[in-house]
View 1 (cartoon, rainbow over the protein chains, first blue to last red):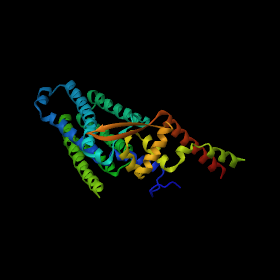
View 2 (view 1 turned 90 degrees about the vertical axis):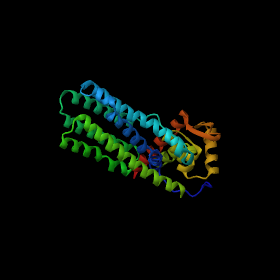
View 3 (view 1 turned 120 degrees about the vertical axis):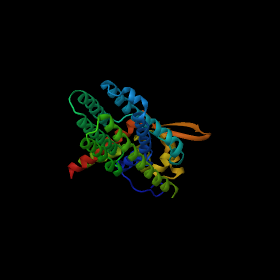
View 4 (view 1 turned 135 degrees about the horizontal axis):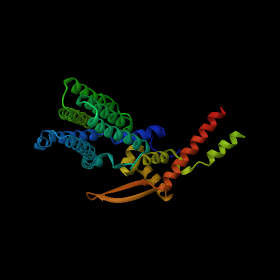
Amino acid sequence: MDNAKERKEENIEDLKKKVHQSWYEDGLFEISFGICYLIVGLMFVSPIMRFLHGSRISIVFLRLIVVLAIVGGSFLLIRKLKEKVVWNRTGYSARRDYNPKMVLILAFVTFLFFGFYILDLSFLSSGISTLLLGLIMFFVFITQYVQAGKPIRFLILSPIPLLVAGINYILGLTPDDGLFLMIYILGCTFLISGVIVYMNFRRKLTE
Amino acid sequence: MKNKKIIKDIMALEKLIHEPSRLAIFTILSGVKEADFKFLLRMSELTRGNLSVHLSKLEEAGYISVNKRFINKVPNTVYKLTKVGRKAFNNYLKNMETIINRKKTES
């Protein structure tokens, strides 16, 4: 036998899962998404909203910006935060460029997003369109749950957008107000969850 | 006869990958685009010396590429599976699966 240090016997699948989870174990994923959600939410109370208000095309344009800002901004922020806060302690790793399964899931989510825009414009009342958004966000969480090696916290977070969408529907909020509420509740949830995970992660590292 | 075939398949397995510590390194590197020494150390739970020796062997075989750089004046070595390394690892997994399946159908 090799003179290796006694290491826990792990099979290939366990080790693969551990590597996948390493990207999410520090909570910076949620913190970055939370920050981006809250920043994007600020747009709704800024004067630009009053300027755009009422125009159907501008609402679609705004939603597109919301999606791009949250997804793009979060991924840039995660990398920056990891570089500053954790890589000097945990070591650096870069994610693989693509994974065929993930490409399929992303294509499905993108399809749902565009489907949502088209349906929202053409057929649906504002209440149902918000419910659809909740459903999309639910799928996003489930995707993250599978991709991140099934950490239970993503499964706990997944019904929140559906719940918020349900509340929106019952209260009969407009799409703008509904989106604003959804973004702020999700942003705060992400941020709180991320900070708790990060505190635990730091404690584990110092032990 | 069938046993002989299985033994032949086992003998054909890439020995450089089959060693448990190196198999762990391959598994970790196959899940990421690239990773530094500290990350590999944490994930594999090997000692520094051991990890270093195994990485050198894999580099010699052309299975991983090594990139040395400085981050804030601190040296940082990044490892990445080469195309040859990724292909060899996939072949190894495929061969292993064949052996296991053959054994299962036999029993």
